[in-house]
Structures are given as C-alpha cells and as structure tokens.
Image 1 (cartoon, one colour):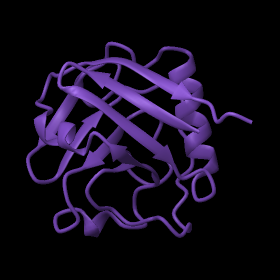
Image 2 (image 1 turned 90 degrees about the horizontal axis):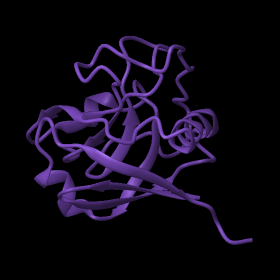
Image 3 (image 1 turned 180 degrees about the horizontal axis):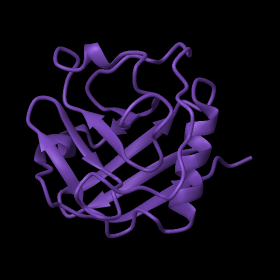
Amino acid sequence: MTAEIHTDKGVMKIQFFEKDAPGTVANFVTLVKKGFYDGLIFHRVVPNFVIQGGCPRGDGRGGPGYTIKCELTGDNQYHEKGVMSMAHAGKDTGGSQFFICHNRENTKHLDRKHTVFGKVYEGLEVIDLIRQGDKMNKVVIIEDAA
C-alpha cells in the first residue's frame, strides 16, 4: 500500500513501513479514507529540518480527538530525507500530525523518539518546495493489486 499527497507544488508518493509501524500506518490510512487531510495545510516548515502537517486547526495544536501509541522498535526507525514520521507532544500522544524530513543530518536525534511510518519514494523535490501554509489538496491511498 502506498499514498500520494497532492499539493500545488507537486505530488509526493509515499511507501508505508507497515511491518515496522502497523498501528501508525493503519491510523493514517483510516484518516485518509475519511478525507481528514484533504485541504489541511503544512502549518510548520523549518528549512533543512521538516515540513509538518495534519493539524485540523492549522496551528499545530489540533488532532483527530484521540491519541495513538508510538512504535519505535522496527528496523526502519531512522530519520533521513523523505522519511514520514509522527509528530507528538510526548510519547504516545500522536494522532494525525506528521512530518517529512529534509535531511538526515538535522533529524537523526529524532530516531526512535518519533514513529517512522513511511518514506517519500517519488517527488522528493516537492519537500523542498513546500512553504508554511501550503495545502494538501488531496491525499490518496493506493491499494496494492492482489
């Protein structure tokens, strides 16, 4: 299963790490299928660090109305360019907010503190084009053909 985040700057295609973070992936997929992310903005953009979105309030203080547990023990729990990880206000407080990393150098301190649940495999250049306030026009889940 993969996802696409459509923005005015381009499309980021994400491969999920379902084996490493099954609960986090399931939560994200459920929210996407409900249209939760459609129209939300990237409310926090820190150059050479991360782009962050998923807050329904647009200020970094909102969520889906519940929290999920962190999943930090999988093989892919390392932050580097294109990695998609859960934002939170402390362990086990994430819900809908996520961030995508600009590079490894400035994000390695997040390893095993924030749940990595996917990575941009196409559209990496879009990460660098996103600015604070840019919108996620549509987020789509692509089911694997069985």
